[in-house]
Length: 481
Length: 108
Image (cartoon, rainbow over all chains, first blue to last red; front, side, top):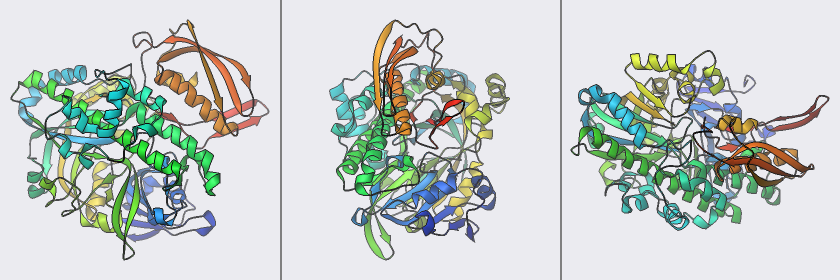
């Protein structure tokens, strides 16, 4: 589909698409991929979308594509772009995505794989009962509109203070589980109405809660700092800001489509709709986005709280669960970088990309400062997930960003074709993975065949010096929306 | 209805209550996104299962309609998956000899 795109191979893990002024590109595109991954990437529109991102006003450095890049709406998924507000830089809600602060948190336990394996079915059933998917209706948390505004302001911190967590949980989340710029007044009543009953629910699609064990350690020192060892049971939670975030994005894409002509912005794709960061609409979106991001941190915090209860019901009160870290992969953040020899503040859009700050960066818990920020990259249900640590290369090349997953290879429709959920569930069971899903198609759409090889994706970011391999995790039990 | 059939099984929905809906857009494409976003909000925000729509007026820039349905009951209207949003990705609204054809992608 993208055969006509001029792609220059720089080295084993980097490709460049030169700036093409006839397409309105303001900069080039840099793609991090191996040759086999690039062959898969070229099958959809993702490179074209990365080129469209390069047309956005105020973009600084290249439009970046991570090795898990695949076609999204407007921005590609796995895309990173930094904008400078002093140069007319824009903010694009589509560059953050509908699921604002979709992200993952990894929880370590004091349980070992051989303790859990014999009681896995019991544990999966308990977690399935205690962690609501929320697709059929509402969750277990009843709050009113005033309390919701506090959640939007204070995220995971509010949840912990109100009994949905333990003391240090919020400390180990990106940004401490709450962005200060949050403005609940910039979030529409509609978004609040959609989000209110959904706090503390997983959602459907690719969201999940996965019970895993540490299959291999690749860096003992860093793994030690993260509290990880071989055979240990961990839980990965993948969810976002639910209907609240989806509505915030819907609202602001519509607003920005209306005001773009006023700012003289013309774009090749209306899903990229944007406004200057300094405009009233841009500021308002950033306040609403931060509020939705806080809702997502609160959501993952509540899910972890319900998980704790479920694990303790099976393994007793001695079962300890602590947060290693919580990272978002759909967000826009104000950060400082050295660009072309100059220190600049930019707004980094990460659409399906994870922040990966290197050792020494001050924006992470002091406990990890010597080893680098934890990064979690979920694979598909039947394969593996990875724990990485941010590396210096990410600061120098990718605005502190790496990949966020394996990257979808087959569309949801394509993967469902000719397969039935019962057979596929049995196959996973034979491989030692128990799956429970609330929705009929939940299992089929997320089968391993639907995704690229996560190990290949990780190899690229590791070899390119963007992040370091720390541990590989194998799934045992999967709870899906 | 096609969009809602992705989100839930709605065969058992009774047209017990009426819900007024309207949408505006600067062109056909933005009108389609606005209308479908209204319908999605009716389902996901107001918790309504829809049986059918009665369209009162439709112009190139506005739609007014009534949705007939009832409050969602997860037992009678089991969820299939979350429809997050209506996107502008490869959005098309065209008049053809066979009638109007629209293409719209939903984020799920």
